[in-house]
Image (tube, rainbow, N blue to C red; front, side, top):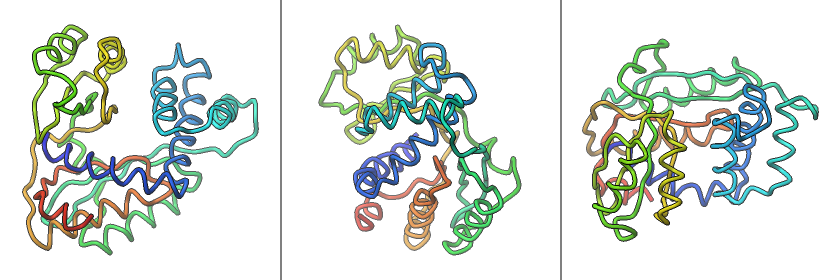
Length: 248
C-alpha cells in the first residue's frame, strides 16, 4: 500500500494549490452531478452522492454550489452531460497507471491523455491492460499521533475494516468499498480524524522506481491530475521519499 499512500500524500499537499485555482471544485462538482444523475438527488439513498457531498464539505465547497450541482444532475437545472470513462497505460519503468475521467467530449479527453503519457515517458494502453493489478477498496489515512493502534483497530475492525497498518507516521485503514461509509461513521463517532478518506484503487503490488524514472513518473501523475477531465489517477509505482521531497 505504500505506493498508494505516498501518492495520496502528494495529492493532499497539491490539493491546496488546486483549490486556489478552483480546479478541485470543478472536479467535485462534476462528481456530484454524475452521482445525482445516476442515483438520484437524495444522499441518504445514494452512497456515491453522499460521499461526494462529504468531499465537498471537506474542501469547503459552498453549499449553494453543491445544491446547484445536485439539481443539474437530477435535471431540475440545465447542465452539461458528463460521461464516465477509464483509461489505462504504463509510465516510466513499466509502472501501471489507471485513471478515471468525467468528460463532455471523450475524443478530446483521450487525445489529451495520450499526449500526456507520451510527453512524460509513458504510453496509453488498451482497456484492461493494467486494471487487473488494482483492487477497489475504501481507504483512510490517519495520523498516528491522533490515536493509538489498539483503539483504532477496535473501532475500525468492528465497523468492517479488512486491514490496518502503519506507514510513515500514518495509519492506513482498508475496507471493502461497500463498508466505506460504515467505517467512516464509526471513526467520526470515536472522534478519530482522517487526513484523507476515499474509495480508491489500491495496487496489489508495487514497482520500485528510482532516479530519473521516479521523477518522470511524478511529473506524469501530476500532469494527468491537472487535466480538467481526469477525476482520479492511480499507480503501482513506489517512489523514494527523497525524490518526492525534491519535486515539491
